[in-house]
Length: 131
Image (cartoon, rainbow, N blue to C red; front, side, top):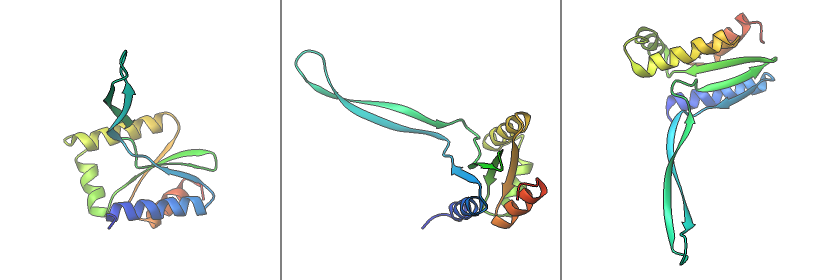
């Protein structure tokens, strides 16, 4: 069963796409990958493993382009999580990285939203005159 946050992300992506925008889920962190290759001389095989970085820490959950504007959306499961996220910006490493990424996006001319529902995204996009 998908988490509540995952279901909210999916609904927001569908809303943005239905509204004529482009939206993509971004997974941050890293994962292990590997491959098998033939060794030198003799043809022995060996498995090589390496780490693949998916996105920088703090990257927003969703990145969107709406009417030619870059919009990032950080998704939380409820309003309580949003408040906790706002309050722990300086004490929680994950929150502080997310806040730092949002600052960089705004400095570059993009827009940032934090939401726990399609309705909050709709309100935010209306305030930005993007829908």
